[in-house]
Amino acid sequence: MTRLPELDADRTEIDLPPSPPGRIKIMGALKSLLREKEFSAITWSEIARTAGVNEGLIYKYFKDSRNLLYQVLKELMDGYCAQLHMDLKGIQGAFNKLRRLIWSTINFYNSDRVFSRILLLEVRSFPDYYRSDTYQLVRTYANTALVIIEEGVRAGEIRDDIPPKYIRQMIMGAIEHLCLPGLIYDRDMAPDILTESICGALFQGLSRK
Image 1 (cartoon, rainbow, N blue to C red):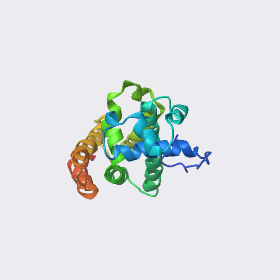
Image 2 (image 1 turned 180 degrees about the horizontal axis):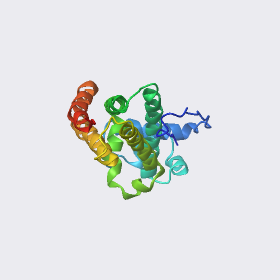
Image 3 (image 1 turned 180 degrees about the vertical axis):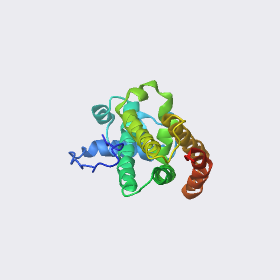
Image 4 (image 1 turned 90 degrees about the vertical axis):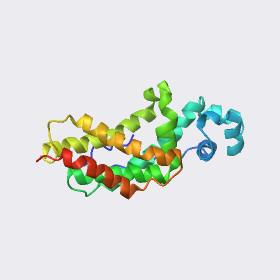
């Protein structure tokens, strides 16, 4: 699992064994289908047909359709976390880091609509999602923001009379609520504009005078 919260540590790359070709095809098929329809409307047979495999192979790699969905999200989330880690390197100051995190998140939502659809619309209604390894990776991403905020409090940049977890929720909530209309109505999310809107609305109030 990507250890994003350790912002000052060097990331060690681990060479993992490549996934079997059949597994890659199945996950790619679901991604392709999610560009056209909601997860609830996708059948097991459609996934197999799109992947060019038999349904038995899907059962071999994924115990059910939700597990397949979670694994697709995990792969996408892991890729984003790795990119975010690189984006934050060399940036000084909590507000600068938060600005970069906000822009990076919105940009990824905007550029990969399958990722944003799964994360913001599809998985949250499933109780078992919150017990999955995939959700733990999502929490790792969210904890990155928390680490930055706590760093800002210690450095005297961010006010210390608001719990850091509340600040994180305000930032994460603002990102999601501003991105949802673009996702639902298939519009450009305008990362630069939304980032400036969020930072302009929140940072002045969070800054320690």
